[in-house]
Image 1 (cartoon, one colour):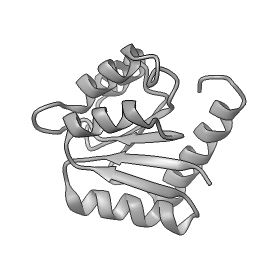
Image 2: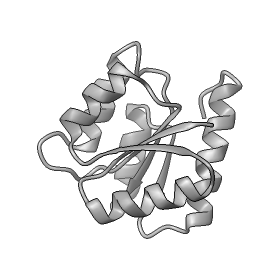
Image 3: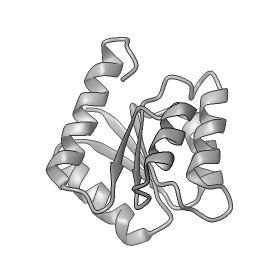
Image 4: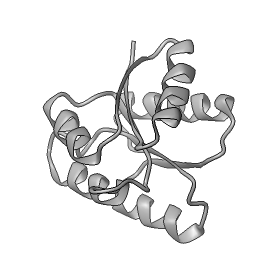
Length: 128
């Protein structure tokens, strides 16, 4: 069973994402704080991270940068799930090392499809 780590400062969004993923058979860990999430991600890297961009203290872009700088976090697939729908935001996160980007509001079916595709790609040894 794949382990997915959800990072979003909105508790309702964390609950929604966790519910969708658990219903599809994934093991889910969550955090609402960027700094504590980074520490947890580097201590025990999951199979995939769902990451919000707009968070106080340590935002998603900074978390992604720091994750990619660490050997333990460099290869963990990251799916950004954000309300920011601008092309520049999407391009910026992909340049920082995100593997995919999905805009809020999203279809649960599309979210699960993206998660499965990223997991399959990462297990094949390639980055998506």
